[in-house]
Image 1 (cartoon, one colour):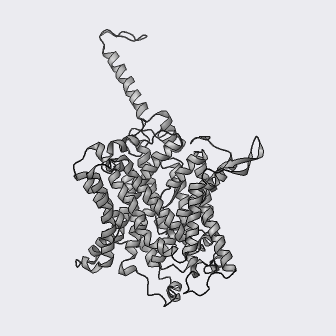
Image 2: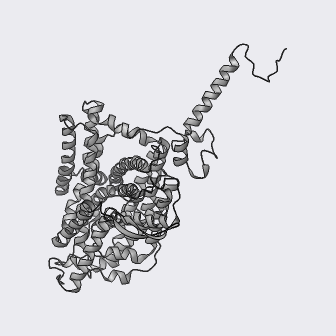
Image 3: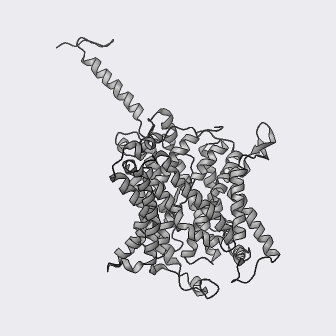
Length: 572
């Protein structure tokens, strides 16, 4: 590692790598608002889509800085989470939040519907449910409950939960790609080409150093920016086909949505500067069904984030995160979700796994690089034209990107089975049954919502949202079966799972890396009461030595006839 977590690289290197982290996370940051746009009745309102993209940039920057300074303090970028998409889409599919009938033959939302901002109730409902669910995440993190929960959550629970985050979205990805399969296939081909076949090819780039000044250096361009390069090339191809009128101009014709001028007006309409603010869509509202659904997404997000903490620590050469750092990181992520709900992103925030991988590629694990990335996110969120530019990406290009991204997320979930004995019929049954029910039950409930009517509207909504959220169904079944069906610790994968994520002793190095800034908890405010807080830096090594010294002193004083040098004998 060229620069460790506590090192401070040159400022120009921090800025360059910060922009690199922003571009790496760009696919996920843009994908979340675009997926929500359809169910928010904003599919053909690119200006509002650009506002959502700018807002999620801005909030992600705030959450990144909070996590670096007050959270787990590892160099991890924060951004929109796919774990909240499934319950959000399930909530928006309820009759109360469905979009009005579309115009015949065009598929656009009626113009008066957009002008009157009737979509505001949908986004405000998402805001309220995310804010309430985030309080649960804050409670789990700051109370230290996450450590207790992780004892019962093993690979057979995590694998179906994460896999079912992306599997139910195949319909959305297929519909977007189906607007022009040629453009979507080209996008997929380019992503695969850059990320798999050309990832080890280096490209000479001009860099500036203090010693060598301007010089060339080898850079793994295709490995770092495969999605961005593929997106730009496909985008440019669509622009050329639009200028040459190779794509049909009739809205009902196949391939029309591959044109770049279908959303071109948003660039002129979007303001140059726009600062997102809390409550920009109105006062948030709350529903019990939405809260219950989002809590399922919160659990999945927490489990994934804990895995990211350990992976990031290994890559940057830091000690394994101690318990207080993990508790604080999960609590700060809950605070980030609270801010995301207040600002109205329509989503929460979580740690980005793909940016953890970038640390291993760049060999720069400095905390200051992620601080620079957070500042870049804040700036990108303020420039309204940036969000507008990403809102003009042709639909088939987005669909091709979704097909690859969702496939990778599914594979990441299944990869947790590496700790499990897959020769065991017990484990095969738990995983197979969980993931199949996570697909079958939501599909049946969506087609037969009238079969789940109890007579209580709120209860009907809760049941429908939970049973149409595949990750909740599959994760709950995996958790229940894995903890009730007899099986050894080795067979269930818990032994290897715990060994890979064992806690570190609170050494001086761990205290320096995971402690609060400015010496809080180590040099200042080190009262014994603060040590009782699960998220407070625990100087167990120092306290242990202090206890041993005090015990040694007490024992030495109790020895008959023992008297320290310099002590005076006192007689009555």
